[in-house]
Length: 301
Image (cartoon, rainbow, N blue to C red; front, side, top):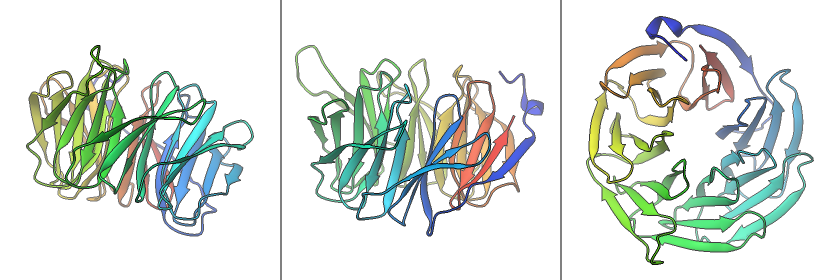
């Protein structure tokens, strides 16, 4: 992994085109050889990141595709749409597997559990829904937010689920408690919409907000650890490095910041290389990938 700020430098720049409208979401396979994009043109596109070629385009949604996700085992992908549905597709050939219906408004986010068996979707209807990937069954509905659910994340062990909302709060849910009762902890402190949440492998929780800050929480009890300030625009995405030592934040101030999770210090500001940065992720090898609304992908290492 990274030894310090000097290890971050511009490595590569690739353009992936073909969509006919704004790209809303980007997702990568664990090996970063496949990239999936969701767009306002109602299409999902699958790209090979090594050669930049389009693998396939998936049709079926009747509204803008707001979010996409690839299962950790790379067997399926999921897409959430303004048409109120979640669709699950087979990765190897793009065949449709399930159309998941249950939300009453636009689906803003979809994420997989670490074992690839479940998908959770967040919606404008203020709820998150847990789905069984194999059968397409609705497993549980998480309700309680006072505004739309914009972001969702599973903990590494799958026991907890975090949801970020435009009600300025993060909710920490127990996915399967021993007594069968739903348990929730409400995390307060942000002063703007929560646009992104992410867990580290050790259970730390990060939240990125339109109040221009990133907050780090204890993902078990909800205690605030650090509030990270420095961005001058809305924070659109947060992601932890695989070892949990760093957290990256992407903002529409056209920068990506890398933070030390122990001290809370910003160790590097990556700027002048993206437009509005809407997505960021660390590869297993330690590269940091950032992308903008137009599907521009930037790899930094």
